[in-house]
Length: 144
Image (tube, rainbow, N blue to C red; front, side, top):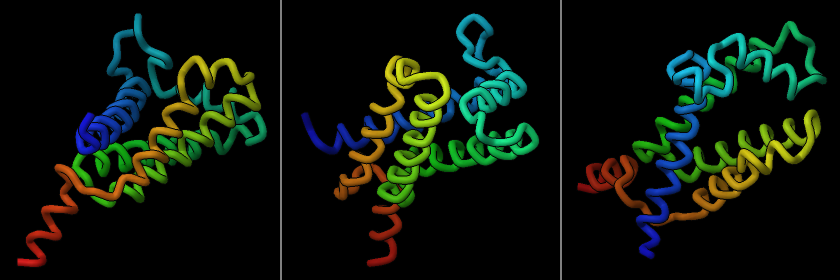
């Protein structure tokens, strides 16, 4: 398979997964398929997988994670600093996987493929050739 297509697939898969999770937090998914259903449900889960943090800072942690997922997703979708945002996505997903593992056990992190997603993000960060990325367009415009 063409490496350019694989890179595009990784960018879109990671980005859409982030945006889907964010949409769930804001109640945009049907309750039948929703993981959290709303912001409060998301914060309850955030507290569950982060028991070492005081309840008072969980909303801040949830907000930071949500903002990061939105920014990372948008940058991956359009191809702005892809390698950097892929690496940051990998770290965010790895933190999530480890939080799940240490709080509720490793099965959930495996069942939801969080380690796999983190590995995919790290692999994406190593793919240097640009394909359908805003960065390559901006470089061409700058060089002309």
